[in-house]
Image 1 (cartoon, helix red, strand yellow):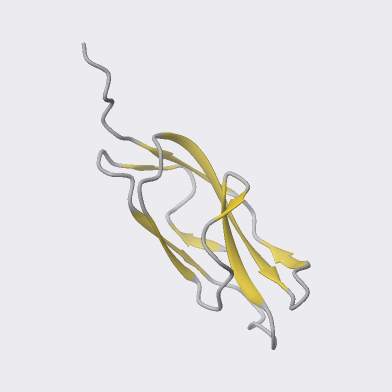
Image 2 (image 1 turned 90 degrees about the horizontal axis):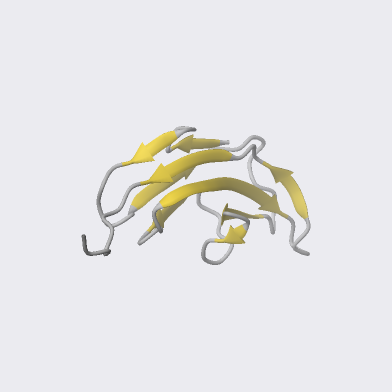
Length: 94
């Protein structure tokens, strides 16, 4: 499951940078990896650590979820999604 950020949180005004922390049970088996998905798209390459640093995430509502994948790429475990909102300054002139 995704531990941080919390579900339905708002990331404050700024560049859209934040850390995602997850935990899973049972431990990863040989050859298994973790993938983080932001709005259904993978964030970086699969890895064996449960921490991701996201940068420059666009403003608006986003969904995150994590997957444990086997050596052949099949999804073995999938977390529930969380929703978060990112606030960023608009570049529109008023």
